[in-house]
Image 1: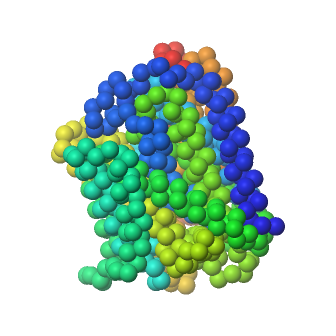
Image 2: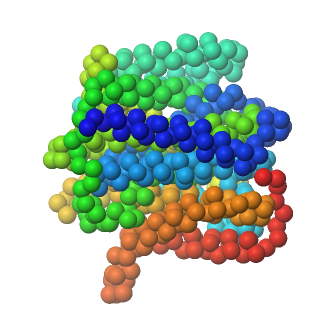
Image 3: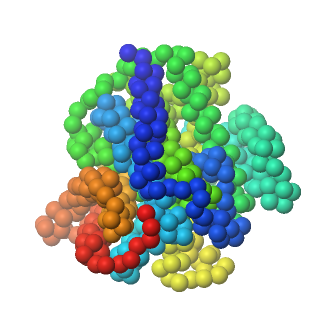
Length: 556
């Protein structure tokens, strides 16, 4: 069987869902193009900026579609086979992730573009708000850790890392240049697109001819140096105005990611690669961890992501020009990410069971598979491989600075720090833990250094999915108190809550066993998992109190 049949079936499911379930959700939420959105009402030119639907979808898609829909499906596909992953990506994206994203965006627009964190303040009170705020901040920290280390791993790839690093820097420079042209020279968006989009393609091609490698310095490896430089980038990108880098880079990145999707799908259909990898390989992964619940926290962003809710309500909702745009941007954006996950999974489908590639990182599997598809379009495979790796890092870039900006906002809210000094200090505080974590050297039993992203990926996925469950819980309270049928969000919430708490329990178990036997061994992952579990249980209690209370709500 050819892999393109699987992708075709998945794409048809997503399109049907958008035209049917997405339309139903729009009616359910009473979306109106006549209602004045916060972007139009406030329109401060900094955060609140009415943005055309097509432009905003590209920016939003590039912000949410990070490494998650690639790394998660590839890892889970290698561990358990592509069958269970495919089912979860399709069903999860349609009924879980897209509902979560769409509802978060609409809820935010209806509450003056407040974030889901601020909505928790409205419905759960100050105690629930502080608990949720702390939980979200921790989750964002792990997003930064995992994705910064993944990017540095791509930059130090023996074959193409130097070229990818150069192309990535050129891409960021072009984003800055486009932002300046749009802002100060009033360049029309169409002209900016026609000029800068080809330049991005040229930058990818030219970057391969001038590979850039960092020299070893003060005993630090190249990967560690890249980690520190990427965190510095996170700092700089999160304190500058959104129009200077976030919006133009996201817009260009959106086209770039569309191109990757289109080229990968077209090449897959032309090549007709056969499915070789087994649909199901077993109920446990190589470390003996079970498919339930590991599948649902490993796939992460490919099916559902709590980080999306923060983006939907933290930045995108402030740029919605019409309420009706929420369907295309919120629901449609998640379905596009589901398609990215299916394409990533197809790079596992074409592998042989014992292929050496299965032991490499997901970025390498993805790049090799995608280059195999794209070569059928007449594109040289080396260029296609580099193109795929740059696409991988582009996904991450767009999430890294958004995650840092959001973490800074939350830390400022927790501390009350204001002004320029508050912005700088809150950003530095939010990057301190990532700095310490990427500096750690963790080794396996054979003495091999384990990349930081591998150490923290399961915890990142679990905290991310638990954040989605808690966001759905808050949205369910909002719907219930508004007299709306709340099962539409409560059913996904219940499933996600069960899987994530189960996963946290598995992570905490070794630490508890050691503790019972009188051995106290500090384990950052286990201790954080225990903290997240406690926060989640406290927030569930706050939700039950809120449902019994009588707080006023805005329209739904």
